[in-house]
Each structure stands twice: as structure tokens, then as C-alpha cells.
Length: 274
Image 1 (cartoon, rainbow, N blue to C red):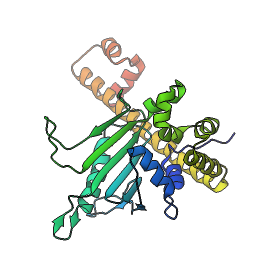
Image 2 (cartoon, rainbow, N blue to C red; image 1 turned 180 degrees about the vertical axis):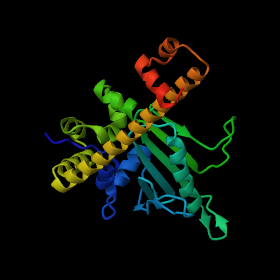
Image 3 (cartoon, rainbow, N blue to C red; image 1 turned 30 degrees about the vertical axis):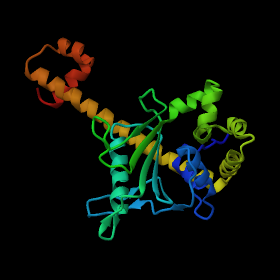
Image 4 (cartoon, helix red, strand yellow; image 1 turned 120 degrees about the vertical axis):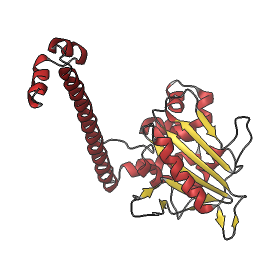
């Protein structure tokens, strides 16, 4: 059975919602997301400029301009403690690049950064962030950051919370399997179009092979990270054992503390000529 790829994946999200020749899908999506009419979506170059030879290529997920708004979207399938820093660096680069208008600064445009984040350790459905003082006075008026807790929002679907489902259906649709997507999209023209495009995309053999490659690369990356982590843990354990041996600690005591076997400790001892 083939895997059904949802719009949780940035490649899928961009294929369906970021059609430069027909931007109405993104226009409607943003209108629902921001709860106000969004007009004239223009997709902007999403590769950020490299300022020196030491910088790597930085590609953001989605950057669009709508009237006087610059909207930057990042899809985060996992939360890491460095994620906000990375995304803020990307967003601030967009802000810096777009606020200079000749010899004056642009004080009229709005800059909105949106995160769709999974595995986020908060109870809120979403949070809004601003540059402001501790008493609520904004330092910059035209900057807003919104982060959606996608696991919390998806749970509304599984809990059959009709009120919340209706409120967030445009986000819930991003990560539903085919059968559930048909249910939630029924009777909604925009969502039915999304469902049709997603179904057709998943039936495209070229797309399936591309996603398989992407998944394979993720598996390789995750395996490399896991190996690096395990190696780091092993090296740390070795250092602890060596330090304890140098202090003439009993091997049985070291085994109790580190949970290593006597044989493992003896091997470390011999490898380091202790």
C-alpha cells in the first residue's frame, strides 16, 4: 500500500498551495488563516541572500507578498530547541531586506511570520509574538509572529470537537489521510479543490518517487544524528570511567554508577593503559 503524503510535508504544501500561475489557493488559505480578506498574492524568491563565503544556502518554505503584507511561512514537522532561532533569523532577513526603500524605511508594510509546528511542548492552540516591552508597548508596530500548535489542532479532529474543527479545518486538512480529508472537505469548494489536488498528486508516480527520495534523505540524516548522539554518549561514558579509574575507584563501584558491565570497564581500562 502506497503512503499517502499530506501537506504536512513542505514539498506537498508548496505544490498545491503555491502555484504562481494560479495563486487563488494560497489567497484563500491566507484569508482563512488571518481571518481577513487577502488579495493579490505574489510568490517571492524563497532563497535568502548569501552575504559571505562562510554562509550556507538558506531556503525558506514560503514567502508571499499580498498588498502591503509580506508573509513568511515555515512548516516544522518537529520542534527542536534551535528552531525558533533559525526561523527568526530567516524572518529578520526578510524584514531587513524588504524594509529599505531607497533612502527611507518602509513603515507601512506588515511583516507576518507563521509557523506550523508539530511536537511543540505547549498547551495553547497558537501563540502570537511581538517586539514589545514588558508592559505591552510595541517597539516595532508592523511585525507579528504566529505559531500554530499543529498537534493540538489535529487533536480536535480526533476528539470530534465540531466547534474547533470548523474553526481550524483549513489547518486540519493539511495533515489528514485521504478518507478523513474527503469527510472534512465535503461541501467546502476551496477544501474540495485542495482534496482533489492532493489526491491527484499522490497518484502521480513521478511525485511518489521524489517523495521517496526525500524520505530516504531524512532517514539518512536521522540515522547520522542518532549515530552522532550515541557516539557522544559513549565518549562521555568513557571519560567518566577514565576519571574514576584515575581516582582509584573500585571497578564494581564504577559499574554501579555508570551501568556499564565489568567487561566494558575493563576494556576501557586496557585501551587507555590504566
